[in-house]
Length: 160
Image (cartoon, rainbow, N blue to C red; front, side):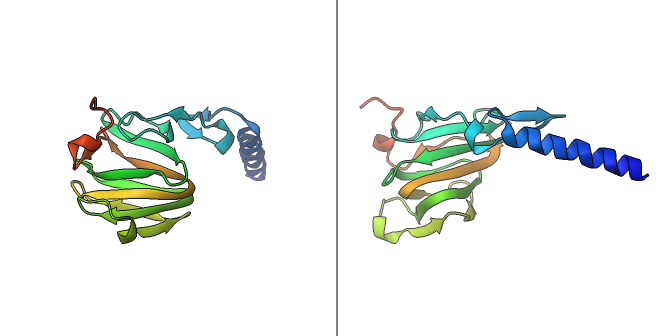
């Protein structure tokens, strides 16, 4: 019995040491660990105004099923009023996201969401946000994830 515990402890310790020093996400028996230095940031996504970077950590936000993605927002970045057809879950990893509700962007009517904040809001709720300092947020939920702008002219996917 003690031998089993010792073997298990050694295996778990080696797994954590290996994962901690890896530069790529490690997948072990269907589990993945993404360290900050292994995240591959890309420009976009094209569904939001230009400026942020994003990384998909789990799943595919465009398809059915669970997904997790992060957005790296530059200081002062704004996302116009919009809504989602499904519940949106947000965790602020670093920086500060300022969140407001409604169909009109009102900088002064936002609530600060500092690092460590978790929030969610129902499908169809109109909201907007801006970043104070470089801010990383994590979005997760059940796909497909999509965004619809209250004012169609705010949609960066539409040609101007």
